[in-house]
Image (tube, rainbow over all chains, first blue to last red; front, side, top):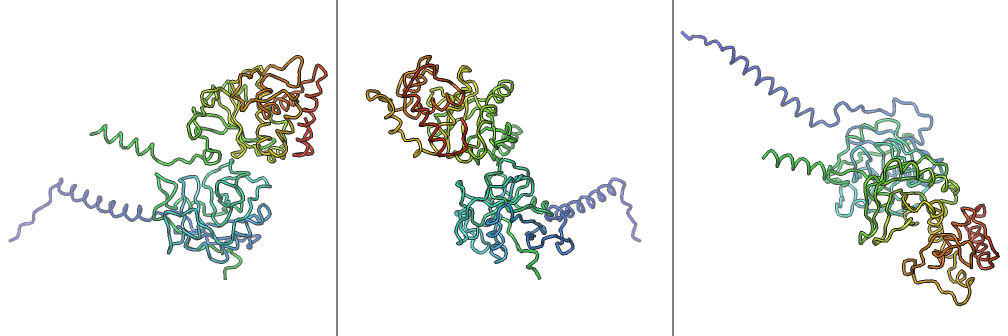
Length: 217
Length: 240
């Protein structure tokens, strides 16, 4: 006859503890791994816009960023930006310069493409369309979510690179050409990969797709 | 062991990247915004900590007490508000850096203009007798550096008597006095006699603070006209 051995109270406690620990461990693993958890993904088709020709959608790993463009403030800059968006040239381009809680920068079409990433030159590439002049005539409040064209240390060197601010930077007024502002999805950009020790990112995140709302079927 | 871990953690913290927007824009470290909501869009910055500049690290300036900063800021702003945003855009001046005990190679100076960085560093502890005037003196250097062709030094030098010669540089001479002469003789001050550029800056700064000539001085009158005409070439609306 097999005698049933009853687990002692302390054994039961240890067993329960191990089970809880296992649940927490596995749960945390999936929670931590999914950086996009709790990030709302906005569907532009479910939102009505007055001027869809000047609404662009930046799709990245955690979802959509919906940006309104301001052609009245910086017509040439917005024209260049839309041209590159419409031609799909920003797709699969890296967010090569990311400063935590400050800005994300992308748009190096020469050295920032996923299939042709050049870490030694990233940030210096050109679009092939030439540079355009800075457009700084109109006042613009560079608040969180503002989108501007990046440039070298000199004015009138804007090309394809752009930045999106993650905080208010009023000193950028009169320094950078403003092209638009994020309407929805800024929190998506706060999840873009950054490096604590450098502005430049090793194995960066990429733009999945960038498109003009009115051009999308 | 514990100490070593703490040190490593601290080092990691100190090494982490911090965005310094001001440094990115004008390449001067340790600055903070003092006031940027100004009518002519000048951005006033102040040294939060001492800073050193230059390839040889020969430019130094120090942070000030809040009280001094407040007091001098009012004076600086009052004087610089006389320049319109359009004029400042033309001459490439946008950032005013306020600090104290400014020096280049250990020589104290009232200001360091840098039109390429659109920046003017001002020593807010500079001699109070000349403080407001030297603000305009330094602004003139920005104007001059941006419009070198307008302020022809040879033409300027020809206004002086034939026997007079300027020094090679402003620090190559002991003519450093900033007191305005009671009776001028072609020059507003001793410092005017150092170089053509400093002479122009002295004339400009005296005009800006409204100094009148006490005596008949044909040379200085010609210099005043030269400055006025040159300024009108840059901005036809410029009012002295």
